[in-house]
Image 1 (tube, one colour):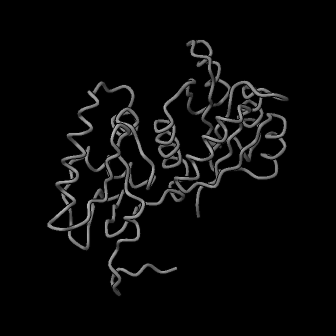
Image 2 (spheres, helix red, strand yellow):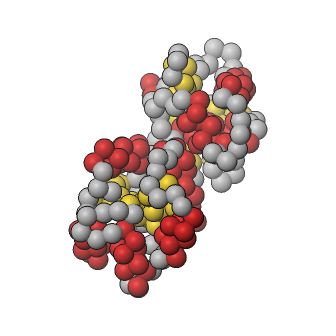
Image 3 (cartoon, rainbow, N blue to C red):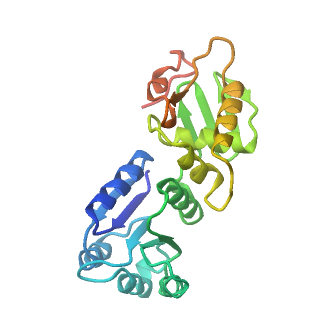
Length: 243
């Protein structure tokens, strides 16, 4: 069962962006525009994770977070707070009322998605799929093993994370900067051309002979896992996927 995430954000464009990215990773998203409405809806049904804006109409995100922590059914709800406030005192305030993580706008969407996965993995491990599949490629997150058409592919840790990142959003084109944020992290300084090197290593490892290359290069934009590759698994009894 997919994890359900509530997004409480009054900026419509940002709310749409977050919903699109979360749904592309398989989550069920409930978008809410007002703090007081979120307060009522969270009394009726508790999501697996809450992304909460600091400033909201009706009821501030800080006050909503404080209220949620006083209720038994939401006292352990994972909460990521979004805000344009970057001062240390404001971050401390957000965390002191019960937020588990704090992201300052503008932020890297791939990094936020990585934080969501990390938080769900800790709080709701049963809601995070341990395996990813695309065409004839299977990736096991627990064992850190990758197979293609049944044969094991040896990948270094960076190439594994890169493949995992691309497989989570088939068809989506990521710039080199987005890949650096999502795979290496914003706190690590790596030249953008390093991405090209690791993509080359990944391609060399996963492609053999005349096998189709699942990674698509988009000139001037970046890289993507080719969405048409998802249907490339050869039809056979061993590769059939139950409905």
